[in-house]
Image (cartoon, rainbow, N blue to C red; front, side, top):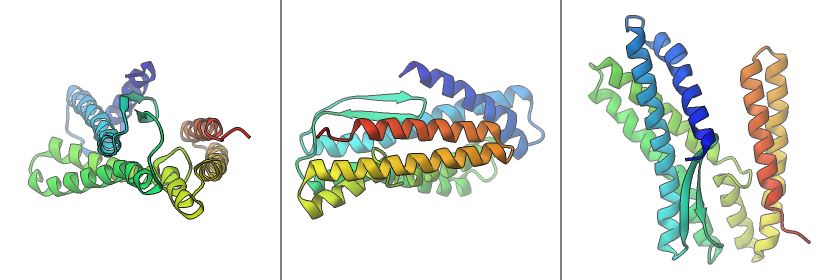
Length: 218
């Protein structure tokens, strides 16, 4: 776990205890809000870990070494050694994570009926269903090195047969999406949502730097 994980864990717990759970349930004690917020934050990061394990399992299937999985401020990353042997393998490794997130969203949504008479568990699985769906959809944005960017790179690789060229194109598209995030962040700030806007700008900046480092040198 990267040190930034502890920061975002604390912030997420605080947001859930101060906003989400009080809005959903009005008659809980403050201790109950904080306990459920902490449990929900842990389950959220467990979902991210399973997302990364999805990538790792498929990579290992193709005999690609997975050095580690790190949880940090923006989620998680599997340290996969080397490139995929072909475009098809790259596609399957990239799409495995979002598919795990969508599966978790489906399971949590089904559990809403099972725990309809248990408010704490109902609130927990309601949030996890939403956040896993959002996680899967966000990662499918075709901005490299997000999963969707890797899926896009695999498609370009399959068409051109040229991995460096596919990586260059995918990274440039990733930079484009990063600038879109930054513009949206500034728009939210000028609309009055300063915390949300700053977070999106920071996310765009991170994506831009990550995409830039993956552009092959000429």
